[in-house]
Image (cartoon, rainbow, N blue to C red; front, side, top):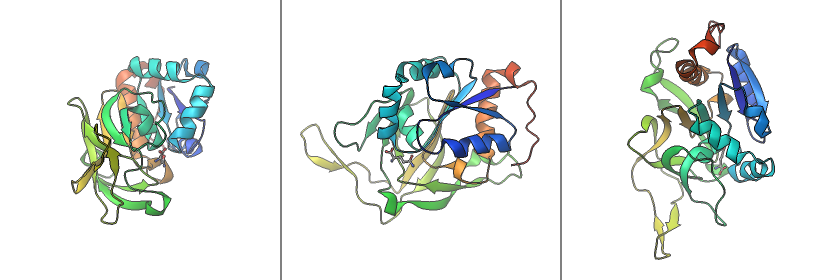
Length: 237
Ligand code: GLN
């Protein structure tokens, strides 16, 4: 059976573990580098990316996480996990934080604002249409959420979200040190895939909809067909 790791330093790792259980998959909590060995894939949950980075540093996890991503094993980052996987993050105070990287994009850490601007919305996600019942929408739960400002040519955009009208403007210093608004479009990217990397700015693990977890497992199956020979995905969500 496939073994899916869930980075369990901080944030919504319990909810990911529950979602995996609901679809009959074994999740393993990961807190130390050696616990990544033998895993087929990894989920990096949402939470608070600065705190998560501090804990990852404390446990010396960054080199092993980079190796895992570099080996092409499927990795899914949700929210703070997306920030972790981005090659570049903006909107960070105090010089920012260490990133795992691998995902060719620029992410804004708090694109949608603070806790008070957290929101839920229905997202159009065409690639979900062929999963369980054919609906091509899903509930997007955005909590102090990041968003993706730009992507490289190898990155497939899976979902975009209308930019809420009340969103606080986001500025970052330009090369000249002047604070400039960095986003003026009316939609923003909130889910992407680049080969073995999946990233969502929202939290599917906080809903009862397991289609994102199943999609991730399908990516895992593509890269480790043998590990899934004993896996049944017939259990209900
Ligand atoms: N914006 C948060 C951060 O910087 C992420 C929020 C989340 O994961 N729900 O870490």
